[in-house]
Length: 238
Image (cartoon, rainbow, N blue to C red; front, side, top):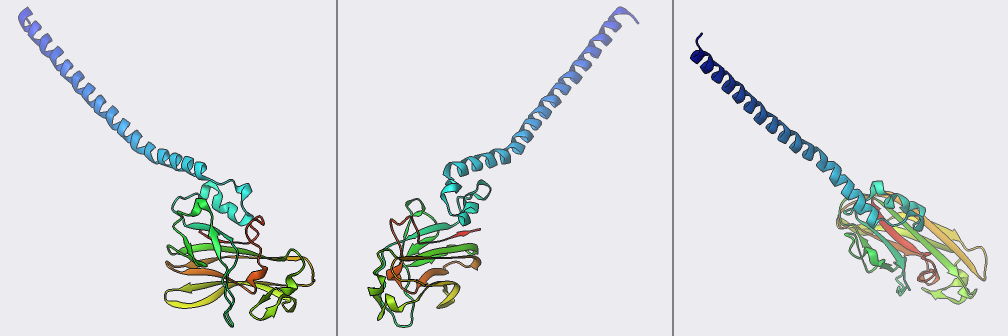
């Protein structure tokens, strides 16, 4: 093979190898770009979960400040910005006497829950969406000054009332007559100063626009307001 032919062959050989090398580099760049996009896609759920966990921790209420039945609601693993919940505190009662009907307690909503999807008005707690809810209430009846025997309600004086009772009732759009779903009662076994606390709670399947209320035997004996939230009512979606 003469020199000219050898030089031509060598040039073609190097050109071929250069084209192969350029092609390999393009494929490597494409592969690297694909791996980078895949890594970003795989990391997005982790980033989202970390962000949600951080938001939950920022909005979380310390479990030590809640009753034991609400600690599950406040735990980070169950934190959800969209889950309906509400906690109500009793206020001074202005219930009128209706024959053969237990009066409905009145409540106030905590400031940090006024934007909750679960709403309250005129004694009724309104369910915003169907699901299983934990419903709870504690009512504290008391006679702080020992003169409750003179308190009269619906024609009966306190001295004649030897037991106290609370009932959680449910009313639905399909059946508007209130139906009792929980009940608690206790006997007053002494005169003078006394206190009786009744707590009930349970899980119920509720539907949108169902309403809950708490009825009591004598609202004049119910503790409220500044007495360390001794009477409260609430629910949360589980």
